[in-house]
Image (cartoon, rainbow, N blue to C red; front, side, top):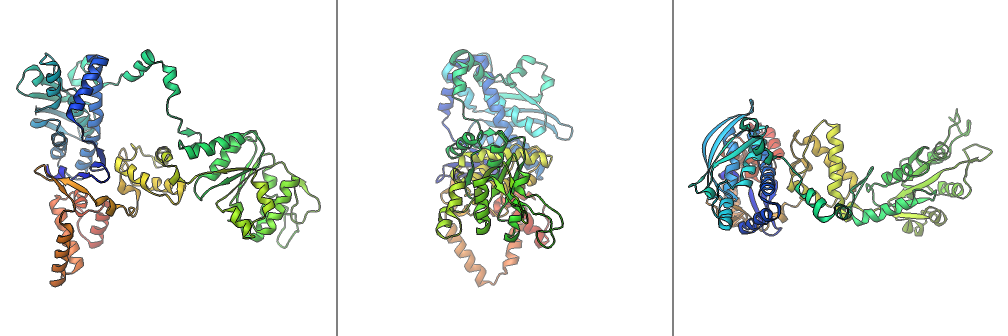
Length: 558
């Protein structure tokens, strides 16, 4: 119980309760009882029972995955399995007593029997409806089944063979593989029935509800739901079917090239070339040759005629990225192309007519560049015909979750992994980060996290950052935990004074810092019984950080 309680953290200042990396809720049992009664009155017994079983099953799955992770980290199988019953007790759901467990993970074999006492669901049902002939711990049965199924790796289903709601002195449950029950009607409770969809269709009007559904998160390669993104995308869509020159403005990494590609792919030039050139990446002495082309013999080394980017983009779109960094001489020639629709290769005697749509992009403030004399005002007004400003990611946090989903899908396929997404704590850190590198930075972070996360698992906060953002100090304020007596204790209660006293003792006795760190890591590993994750939590660092320190000091990691 102590190991499990060490994972439970209360942060009153931020309004969070954490169990490892999952966010938890502390709610009134009476409110749940009212909800249960409302479901029974509205849906009827069978549908309400199925819904509550499925709700419990989903909750149990999450905790079962956490327990399986503890087992894989070295905890004894039965001890790891009992984390679920202990958690149910901590949550105030029910007190669990083990009668019998037969579990073999390698063979995916399970049979278990448990006694429940003080089950809240029985108490709620009896208080509202009195005693009956059927067991009533529906969400708890669902939880036990979901928990064990996730832990064992196959569908395990429990039945309640005694229940206080039927007048028994306590509740008793038995769990085994679903197929061993040979009771299709009972197993049907564990299958999803889409109750909400039927209610919408028959009672509320499906078409009306569909009209109120959340806006789409995806449009081909562009992802976003925030007002800022939608405003920019609406402008982009308005310009798609024309040949108007578009200027994309925004910080580095906001996705300007993706916007330009979408504009090309969804316009009348979609079947023609899309040519992109980064104006800042080409040396100034070569930029004109790259854009406009070269005739044979135009300069020393020009042994062959070569078409420039404008000619290669003929009939299609030319994307001028970082246009604000064009040298002054090139700006003059670009302005002439925009005015006449003609280019001149270096060394050519006759101009060449081109039909090209120009999409330019820059992260430079062109107004300031004009005032400083670095950018021509006449070229600015040519490029600025249809400006679209793409807001930075820190101003469109609503876009982060769908972007995370898209990147997880992308990199999971690339690295042949199946992941269930981010933990609650990891998502909270992602949403709180400022993202100075915008979408490009987010994509890089998610790629690294996908690579580090275990297959079929979740991305944890430790997988996101090489060095976690400096939020620990702020989060520590007002944080507390539950001790083994069930008392809520402040994490920082008296810590400052204890640390001061410890520092004085270390200095007075001339204790070597390296030796102290080694001894502290050994003690943590001994207290955690070799569990690296638990030892890291005791030390207040991440698992990878502890593993690195142990390896650096030549200490065993188990």
